[in-house]
Length: 342
Image (cartoon, rainbow, N blue to C red; front, side):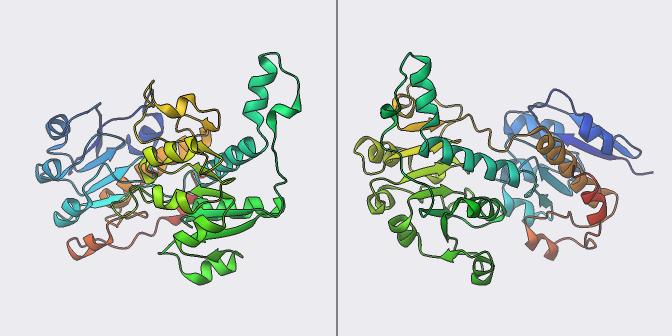
């Protein structure tokens, strides 16, 4: 019987118990590694039938060295660690897990928004330093009636839009890939990015990191914003031009920022954002809950089973053009996937 070699290139998890619960079976050999470089990935993966990847580089050089690989799954929504074009050219399916943390990230964006607008972290810091006076939080404005602008209107911002409706917020969005009817059905107006920057009191960034979105919120966009506007980012740090953000905050072009992500992580000790009282920072944790971790890891492993065991395209296939290169059946494992969601 043909045996399949499945390699986890790297992970920050203490063990692989979720992966093993699905992949520890005949005819699969699960191999765990902690690769950091292209050469390390090639050494362990050159003969792999499937790869599960977190941060290790799956570059064109790596992909060209893969002799047997049929599928690469990524722990996460973004696939910027993987050269999609190279994978497609070689007939390798690439899959992500796009829906594992929509609630967590939208909850975190909401928490950052409320914490900043109600000055919760500033007040907590003041009280613990001996100051008991609400005046130090001035000004605070009523939330109801304000406008939330969503940069991107995928699963996460749609979830956030639903969560803020009871708070009385108006919601607008910018997403050139979103059909108008989807936004209209959610009661959300689709605008240009310039229009959104002008109209929004709160801007929440949810765009994926791609060549077209890197630095998409820069000096031009900050110059269009209201002086009392705040910006929230729970997507990727590089979507915002950090130097332009710091300049806008320093010059009071905007009122504040609440960031779960920055350009370079972990944040460097001398990053100016750390010294700014009008900035809230959290350590790229918006995605996290115990339930989200188990769902992420199980679904990433399920993508391997789709291809190796079922002979099907993975449910969350990213590079759909690979269908021109490979002959697999369509995925019919929805029931299996839904069974792992808590």
